[in-house]
Length: 500
Ligand SMILES: Cc1cc2nc3c(=O)[nH]c(=O)nc-3n(C[C@H](O)[C@H](O)[C@H](O)COP(=O)(O)OP(=O)(O)OC[C@H]3O[C@@H](n4cnc5c(N)ncnc54)[C@H](O)[C@@H]3O)c2cc1C
Image 1 (spheres, rainbow, N blue to C red):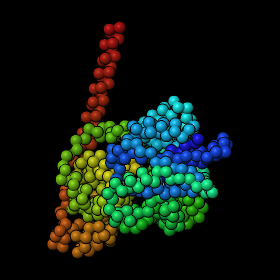
Image 2 (image 1 turned 60 degrees about the horizontal axis):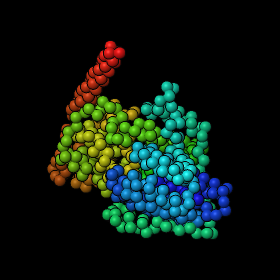
Image 3 (image 1 turned 45 degrees about the vertical axis):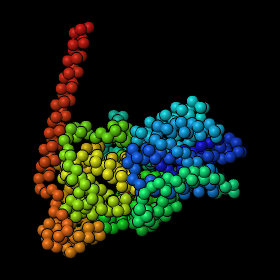
Image 4 (image 1 turned 135 degrees about the vertical axis):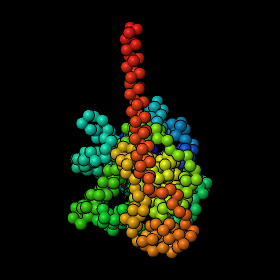
């Protein structure tokens, strides 16, 4: 029996493992076509700080997947394993009970997922099960592109050049969903999913704003390509305009495949009107691949370490009051506060604002970026380890290709530039509704018109100097430690030689 193991690829179309399981099963026998499983690891979700809204999205999407597979004659079982550590045992038992001979799945790249998959592979191989992995989660497999020195790319610009060449040679194939069948399968996991959904406490006001599942993701992709792709480059930076795809939750849970997105954008490129917007959007899909390959090839970023080790020597402040003010949108900087309130109220935040708020936390408030990274995960419906970690490290100047440490966004200038009329701010910070479109960016200049709004939590002036000094000191300390380390190594080497 062939088994498809679903993870963050909750769809039936453009799904290589499902395709392979079905075609290889019909080659092998005329019996039941294939089975599918999803392992529900709620304890792991807790450890990975997965937002309740994201859990809702995933569970509802699993439910839709179960029904879509049943219409194709395939049973979807939902197996409960508290954490990843329990998965090998749970899967091995299932495989034995159902006579599984072949397991098909898409690879995942963060460290815990890789360790889980290694343990599963060892366990199932011991039972004689053949395993086959695919890379539908990315457009270019993580280890496919190497620099001239044979090392992974750590600078996006150079990576993107090679990525474009690869994509020109490997146009992704998007396989249609397998046809529906007269023989209906069973969604065996329905009760488990219902129970898990009931145990979630997500306000209906939050879930009502979103649609889960593959069908909704396709509709969203079509609508984006039709209505917004052409203007994407011009509009993507303005939070008050719905100028981006809003597909991040779908992409990270795999209700739509990145290959389908790429295909849709490339087709639109054939239309001269969409060329510029489509190329720009494809660039974002390349960023997504880039952070996945970083995660796959530099396990330290999965361990909470900075990509640039010298930045782990920075002495962050431990100010809980400042952190809470940031979380609750009470910093006194309107754009930052509007963004944080949008995140908590909707489970999503615009990309420009993710950069602004992340840089504000790490540079203005001088708080460890890992605290912000965790808070984002706890609230984002699209919470995605690689993209979130990459975005946070970039903003805090701790990561690959990071923004230089001396570059600090001025939150007022960002506000005047990207929300010039202050409409986004007015929507989320009603205390400022008495101010006009010019005043709204600097409410402290009109304290009588916004009496309920706090003054700036820290001044912007002086932040750049403080950050520059701290980064330079950390670099010096790091370099000294490195040279002491190599001097010690040399000395030890010499004394060993002397003894010999
Ligand atoms: C601090 C910070 C944290 C972030 N956390 C996440 C996260 O948890 N999950 C997440 O999916 N994205 C994250 N991003 C990247 C980006 O902000 C979101 O992908 C984007 O805002 C989602 O909106 P969209 O789907 O409309 O994007 P679009 O502009 O339509 O882009 C299309 C797709 O490309 C991918 N993408 C776009 N920008 C990036 C990027 N910078 N890095 C990686 N992939 C990208 C996403 O899958 C996105 O859905 C983060 C960025 C920053 C700066």
